[in-house]
Image 1: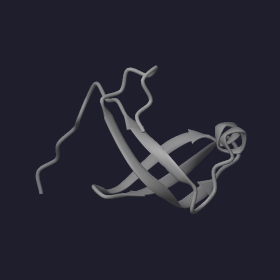
Image 2: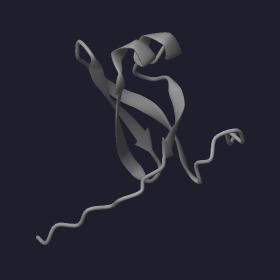
Image 3: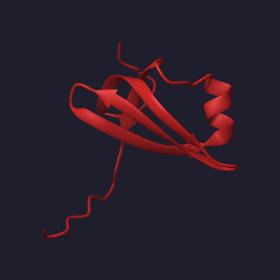
Length: 71
């Protein structure tokens, strides 16, 4: 299922692996077939969306910049 109303081409279906909750923002780790995707969203959004480990979600990735570091 793709969300059509959002202008995001990179959509990764997965399940929430872990949520590290903070007072204002939380880190949400999503296991996808492409690997682990981590999002930082407001803690309020975590609660309003009913996010928890094991919940199936779409990780929507839209970026205007990608940084590269030499190893």
